[in-house]
Image (cartoon, rainbow, N blue to C red; front, side, top):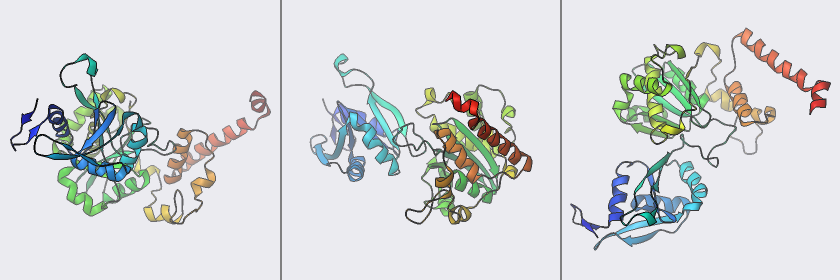
Length: 345
């Protein structure tokens, strides 16, 4: 059975369902499950074909029109999804929500996962020795609120300050994606250009009351005082917006984000991007160059690798804190080299 749209084009029930779901995610590439394949249509198909190097075909879309089509087997999702995300795309994965054998009507479908450069659990997308931060950003005049959340580790950090401080935070935390109010898109692009993958969200998400309520509800508290951020209004807005973004289709998967921490500006030496680059701390403009992190990173776990990188990019200023860190490292060096420990292993 086919239905005629307002434009006069006759659509099949399947395509009508597709367009209804696509309308909810207009800025994402929609992977639409049809049987054993994930299919893309129209402009999404053109982009998918180009990025993945798969065949682009056309199919009839009713009686008098055609639409581009590109797809791949559903079991190849882990192979193709990382390539789409690394190309800077938000990808909405639309699955069949019921067994086709149990219904005589069109199969019910819905988006089960929304993946973007800053929001992913996929092991083939993530580098486990690096944080995959999504940054929420709110700026109003000279005051900037910043939030950094890594859903793969549960870390949630916030800060507030001027434009220079915001620049240093972005440089040091190097988020995979930055979200902000779409009303600020022009200003964001003027300041940062294409340095970061970015996405503009609706302005109402960046309202103080909504952002605060979003955080209170998630953490199950009646106040943010316990996190030490109660008076950081711009940071709260940024954090609430970031939480809104990552929870879009992952509400049940965010329970491990159990707290939020304040980044203390005065505790660290803030290195600018030129210092980080010229000292070749974590990367280099020279091919096959050996950076400092390459030399000193003998960590055995992803958590250790992430912590070492954080320490390297955010050197402590407080002498007492430095000495406490040195004493902790010295203690473990002594333990690891003790005869008793060596006999244990």
